[in-house]
Image 1 (cartoon, rainbow, N blue to C red):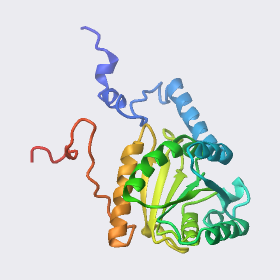
Image 2: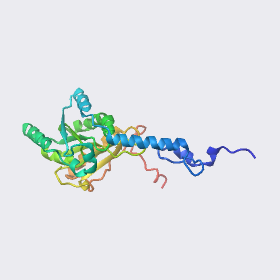
Image 3: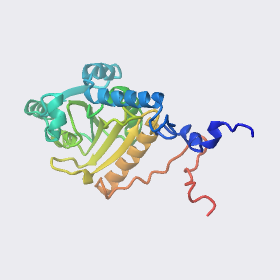
Image 4: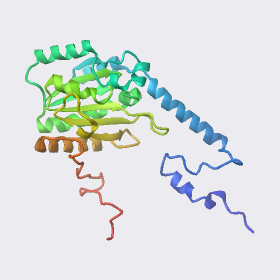
Length: 269
């Protein structure tokens, strides 16, 4: 009887080539193979490192300046990383000095803006370092087309999503867009989240926000994320709301065709 290749006996191997998920890892006795165990430990270390990586706001500010984009550095009420991780509430509001700094800026630039742009380290400064600039470039193509005015890029150290509401309210912004590092996964230590709120004010819950998740090269592309965000912003202005009552129904186009992508589950029905 001819020997059958091991790969042909495991139908999961074909799927493994299509996903970073940990499937078809094999086994040695009742345990994982050494290589699979080492890969897991490496991914876990990357995720932990992403959480504790310091926010390089100075480097990001310099890169923004090179693109003629002004920025302001603010701090949340969390004084350090340990406090930020243990007290989520402190990351949701500005430090008193930062709040006053923003009031002074708003007083010097009256009239408000259409869009407040906020960038916070969140749970992965790595994501912010890698993806902020290319995403902003794509987003600003859409805001320029719509004629919307933008705030300076507000950089927030030790910030969580809700801090953007306070920033938007202090700036008198009609809308606020926050870019923030998402909680790292074992295959995605650099996932960027984009949160959008219409009519920002202190005290809003997540039900009033829209989220576009997993923005990175291996996930949702910058162009696709910016396209979806622009749709949400246009609809929010038309309907004067955001959150659970505003659904992402943007028509998605591929590079190969000019028509919306067909749902393969419905094909042929």
